[in-house]
Length: 548
Image (spheres, rainbow, N blue to C red):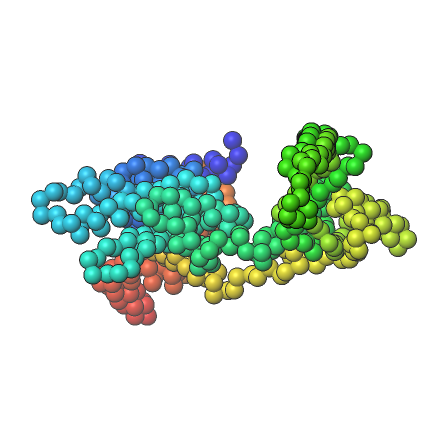
């Protein structure tokens, strides 16, 4: 065993059992005080997150916070949730993404707590509207992307002396996560209109939690301007997505940026066309008309003449003239139908008139691909290859007047070329104020415990250890060590050489070696007993006078 360890063990044995027990108790007390103080001071302060929650919401909130690693506590009433100070905003954002709490929207369960006694018609109507709003809000929250929703409905009111009936209306505020909030807003408008009697979709207004108007008034999708803008955004997004899919495997997602501008024509076109085929005819109808006419005329009477008016003149009867006629007629009409084809085309689509594409590539990435010794000609050739790739992915058409530009530039640090704002010193200090206060209080407690606990303990042990190591001389020993009148002081103060007395005790030799000077011994005697020291000094002073 090393000598240092042996000396430590020997020192501990010299303390004794009582002192060792005392030292262990003090050390255990100090450690306990430090541990309790550290736990108490480092315990986070809790802030109220939500109050008035249902038990189901409390359970779901606890599961979500536990999965996110956020500490929480439930109030004594079981309807409130508390989180550590400084994490309230983070916890609320996390719960909002999960659609919690859901009990804020009261539905038809409101009628469970409504008594029929003393309930007026107005209260019944208000409760019905509240229940309808809560049920619609719950249904809206089930739509993908909608994290929270709040609905306000104004029902129609009928009055005896009102000429025009008030039409119902509604407003909806949603918290949405995604980029297609406008599409969901249109669906929400039709959902609310179908759930409220007499409500039309154009009377429903939809906003997001940031105050942006998503849908209001007439259906904006029916207007030509909104439709053109929507089609342009869709085409540009699709073309940009094609560019990303083509360049990401080669350059990486952060080594290029693409911008697309599309000129789209969304005019509605209607085309009607009639085609006749003269070589293809069809007999439609045939009409035949036949007419036979025969006539025979004969006059029996004599025609009147001058002779019949002369007197005494005998007239002879003769036959009258005769005539015969016959007419035959045949008519045939044939109607033919010429083969014709009518084509009516109505186009509600769009046509891309012109497209402009700009792509910037990180030059450092190209140098990494080509090597450190890449020449500008090699970089230009690689940029040309990238331009051909982009043209193929976007459907580039030179005849249409499309423009494409690919450039290799040096990217700056930051997200999308924007510098990242670093929080200031005051903001950082404000964020960690509670932690700094706890750390300072813990340091103060440790210092006080060490100063008032460890230092007295060490002083007590040190003071008790000195007599055990080398015991100080008693008053009689100090008196005997002082010079006497019968022996000269030089002989008394002279140190005996080692080994001068055979058979001497080793402890006496050690005491002889470390014997202090007479002046120190005299001062020690004065400290031990002043009266006896004064008597000895008077005796010393009286002896020389007697001798002389």
